[in-house]
Image (cartoon, rainbow, N blue to C red):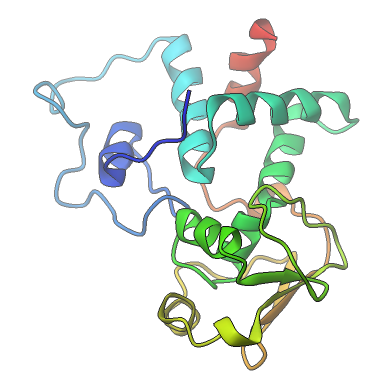
Length: 203
């Protein structure tokens, strides 16, 4: 399944929660699912609950189904609980780190900055949004790119607070991953155990 490129607010309304990585918009005017029967009573089976939690991750972090499934498989191999390990791997993606440093308003915008070569890791250009940032790495904006409107406006009007695992110097547009992300750093209302329950019987 390909990465979603349709209306973002529609996803927020369908899943019933804010998705800061996908969009800054909130479904305040229409806080119910889209469609003809959106305002009716919603029935949630156990499968539907698991599916919705999985979809929150997929849409918030902007991944294809295959990418998310592969990350979950990797998360299962570690010593930590699979749900927590999966969230840590997602938070370590370069496009997410650029977003969490408030260098871009959303993860799709951050992905575009990375793909176009505006971001450097330890002084070297990295253009892979899926690049995994590790503690100690320095993330910076190329000097010629620091005046881009999307970057300056995001730094001036951050959408989220800076997470504990990152530090940022607004003068040099340089950040650093201080430690590994923790569960408390994830800015998404999520029951990760339901994601584990969704994938476990399917792998």
